[in-house]
Length: 115
Image (tube, rainbow, N blue to C red; front, side, top):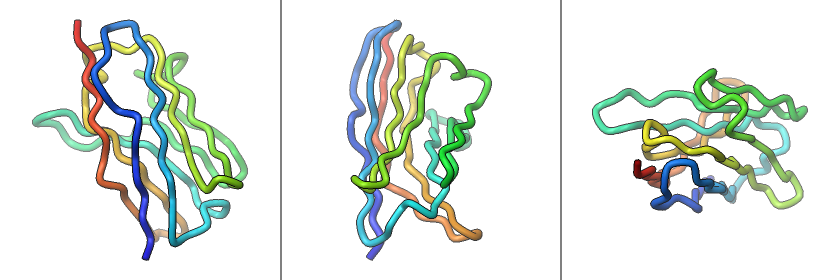
């Protein structure tokens, strides 16, 4: 059974940092594109960042220069380092794995940034 479990969310002040982790089980992530999405209250879920199987990272414009995605295939995990957090980054953050139009999702971790 495939599982993606996010951790590392919490409450942080504006300008602070958090590191999200996503641990995968029941699958080997090395062939997958791994991503982070977020959904703020009343908003649609949006892509924040993804990293391809060959390690190429991509970011939505609003987080470029502040967030860094990385993957550790040996640990079967992906991470999102979030710096200079802003109140508008407040959302539930979801881990995603995609391979040939097959998608897996975690249950999310809440990030709250206070002003």
